[in-house]
Image (cartoon, rainbow, N blue to C red; front, top):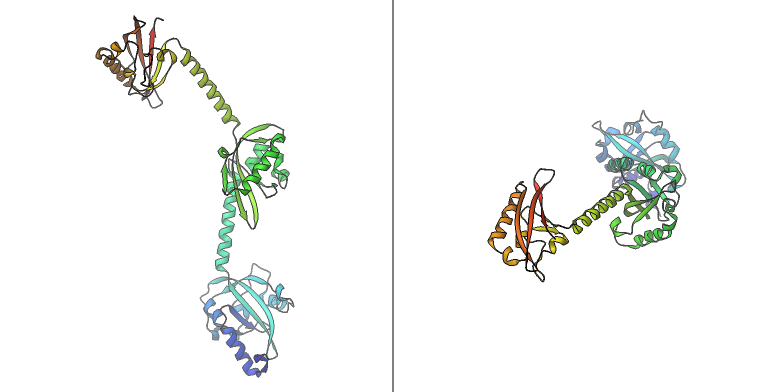
Length: 391
């Protein structure tokens, strides 16, 4: 038998007071008219009152009506107290007033019951300051993230586990030529050339099963996009996957590298042309560091070295190279003037000197010109050595 049901009325309220006082959650007991008949210890600790301050006072003393809201606390109690389904009993966000005059964001829930045959409302009050703080922090973080997405220079496209587009920022609109509302909930394949769709879908599936959370373009085959007008263009992509609320999403940061690739190809072509001239020039050419070490040397210069020489040409000082007529090249009369001339060019002074090698037993006169090459700062970055001779 329920112990409370056997108690006389005057002890029944004391019984409920004892039970409620032991709860860690703040509980207020009030009449249907909103008069407070009991507050437990957790309520007093939460709001800072003494029991005698509030018992007999209207509930609006603790939860005043907010001028900015339509909800009247007393009418709200009457509306929701008799809700027959406990699962439907709801919390309302209200502002409680502390004894010191401060305000406290609370959740309030009410259930109707009887004490000694008298109707009472049992009001549960929860401090939601921490939760509200967390919500505001999350809201601010989401707002910052949204602003970053909106102003990001990179195109950002997110897809769900079915490879349907769920985010398409303004930079993506500019890149692909679609408005966001035209692509949301559409398959990602609409942004990929037809010939690459199947392989790309397979790579996404492979990435799903991989342990790494992100993947750079350098880890992938080259990526291509397709604009609204059908133009196919190269992309640099970084892909990230995130599991949130049980759902997997992928986010790609995309850059159109059309101009960068064009500049790269132009530079490579320029380098090929320079290399062709460098390697096929009829006179000897070597590119040196300021201290005289060989960085590059062309075919004509390499042909002036002794056959079968094991000493490498690059990386060593030019005056130590195994030139033809080593007996002449090794002597101080040859090496020292060349060394001094290179140091002079490294100091910014163009230098010219004449030397003589030996080829097939015959003398080979050679004119050496040393030209300093300066960089943007005005310092000498390289020394260009040119050897002209009669072939």
